[in-house]
Image (cartoon, rainbow, N blue to C red; front, side, top):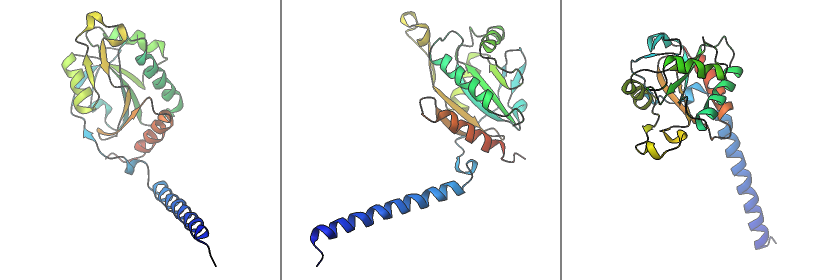
Amino acid sequence: MVSKQENIAWGTLIAVMLTVSVAYALQRLRDDVPVSTALPVLAEVGRFQLTNQFSIRVGREELEGYVWLVNVIFSRCPGQCHQLSLQMAELQRKLPQELPIRLISLTADPEFDSPAVLHRYAGRYGAESNRWLFLTGPKREVYDLAMQGLKFSVVENENARDATIDELFIHSASFALVDRQGRLRSMVQIEDRDAISRILKEARALAEEPWK
């Protein structure tokens, strides 16, 4: 005769086996779905015209057909922005050059970050001129692209007099991925443990999507 304890033990074992089976099945389903189709369209990036580190105008038309990998930095920031730029440099090294991907760093401090300043900043991180763009321009236009199109948070610190250089501007510590049709598809926080591997995987997947 089966005891109550044995019934409980068998019930627990069956429940664990079912849980594992369901988790495995769900994982197989996720694995069978292409990464790009699993990324929702979060927003449509509107038209813009900004200036890169070579004083060349760059807008949505110039980026047509490319996946954009975007972050927000400012050159005077020694902390968080340094980390963001190091991560972008790592992504530049790991992404094959033949992929239709452009790396973009928007400045949160356009009144200070002129093209010449950004050109020097780009040199510190080994930015390849044909792949990694640093964009500046009128503050309103830069912030509109960052906040409206790319859903970043960017705010000038109202208490700048009492702030450290790091705190002059408060902005998102994340990367935005925009597809070849100019649609925001993903946001990845730099604090995520697998941030780099996730960005690489998603960027490659978006690069394989048709755009016409």
